[in-house]
Figure (tube, rainbow, N blue to C red):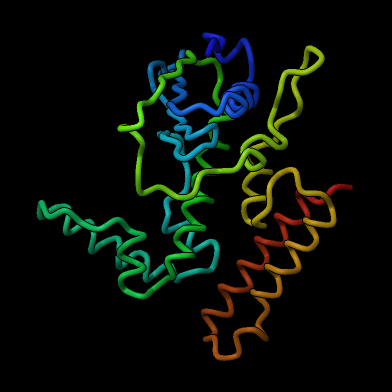
Length: 241
């Protein structure tokens, strides 16, 4: 498949669309060309045109942080398990992955980990849309090289809807990092309309309401109020006028 050699000649959204339509198995590699990060590579792994993994060093929340933000687990418990795994790594023993350890200790469900991993996968992809110019390379993957142990691939709608594309000589406005963070907190894509934004806010707000946590301590109630305030700011920042 012939692709532009430079990201500046197209958009990442256009590249993803072409690879999806081609139903490819392989890896799209983006190598930065500008500034002190020149030479740093980011890789998007495709299986039959769908995105199954994203490798990047860009700043993306770790799995534990995603689980905490979704209300699936307490931050203290995540920290305790992470410290145990780090100690195992220092002793040269092969530790479990964080998600596996949390499930094995019955701290979260395997379904919650699966959802958080897919959410994190989407966040990694979102971060790549902030790249400047980069070299574009595509490597076809043999069947024997297929990766295992990753969450269910992102659907075409998840990685194409609302993405910047070249049309009529210009680009659609891409959501800012702050906007993407707000939509992420609400648990909806940047393409969501007013009705869906309102629905998502009401659902998450109800989960944080003190009446839903009658046995919470004063400290826990204060944390809930803080999370509600953050949710409210996100809601008002992205609600269309």
